[in-house]
Length: 300
Length: 300
Image (cartoon, rainbow over all chains, first blue to last red; front, side, top):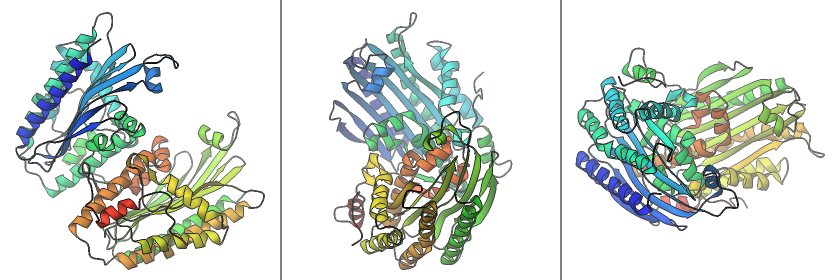
């Protein structure tokens, strides 16, 4: 067992560092903090930013909640229905919607869950470019692969596929973006301790700024047209569709009476829908659509 | 049993009349038609309008589909699993998103479903004003009550409550708008024939233009500020949340491989999200929020 204090200190520090890094990169807006408490135990620090130089809307949330284990979680943890147990869940979750359509949307979540005698880590990072630039996509996946490989060379291929399958919009037959990594229920095994899992999750969390800040810097001053902006708004519409129809964290949060404003901080500032939009042949928009597929290998 | 030909002729004519009436009221844009076929049987006429004088985006869809009865529908119809049966479903569904924030969003759906030996009608109309004007809300509900009362004085109170419960966003603790009527599984009873049910649904469908056109005319030229527009976009965000998280028709359609573009025609052209928006004390926005509750009686 990892102590709750250790877990919480790491996640709080991670939130601080990411907010500091994004504040600096943005240069105009700063994160505003809302502290909240959960009546049943625990609480969180919701930090949001809007109307920046780079970031149009974003949130970086920390939460740590605990209490009697709900039934569905007992099932997941393999506990008997009549067994009394407590749960503890902590993590950091973030989504950044940039102003410039040439800067991609990014999402990251790292979390720890304990239910009775069980404990595991979960999380992921995925990138949603409005326009897919192959060089950037390769950079993003290469960084993730390097971080994963330091821990276990089976992680990247496994978690990359998991992300392809998870960040997928069936009714559009499109992936949300270019994927990334996704993992859940990483518990201790014969060969891997829970501390190894924790170190892996720390590496992922700590890699965030070194992955996203270069993508901001490279693209934030790129020129863009009104047509690029319109396309960005349509792609954000897809982001909304994924989050509200399929995302497990969002659905779980909304259906279990979570803190709505913290959960829905992931939604974009503005999104558009247009009936049966079809990009022009051989346009960058069409190229992007053609790359919103599972199973593309971006690393060598 | 009502013949499919009769049902279909009514729904097609209803779609024609509503599109004609809305085209005229808008005066600039016209509905564009997409004909589509369902590989397993049947198809539809999706009609959409955008960038009008009055309507920013809207759709009025007709569909009539049939085929072997899916399992979930057999259950609903009380058929045994191994019993072979066909189903037939037809209806008209519409959503109109006006440009002017002072003109309310409207939704109507009327439908007929047959599964094996069972047949029933369902549907509803509900109004989502960005700003609730009591006079308009009373007019809307009074018209619905009069239409219902012509058939059965128990309909309005029953179906009004059903709408309050259905068009509700639990995670916001808000109704979507001021409700209206909602009904489902209206089959024949000892006292009511299926033809009576059909006449009722026809009355509802036929009342649409006489309900919505006056609301357009009264409000379309009202002045509005940029702040009114911003509020409209936030309210549309709530509309998206309801449709993607809770609306049964939308969820059912997306999860059963329906025609995505026809299903999602209900989404607004543009919607906004802002972290923890709070209207000013004693503002019209605050007043509107205070009226987004179940159980308000708008009729005398």
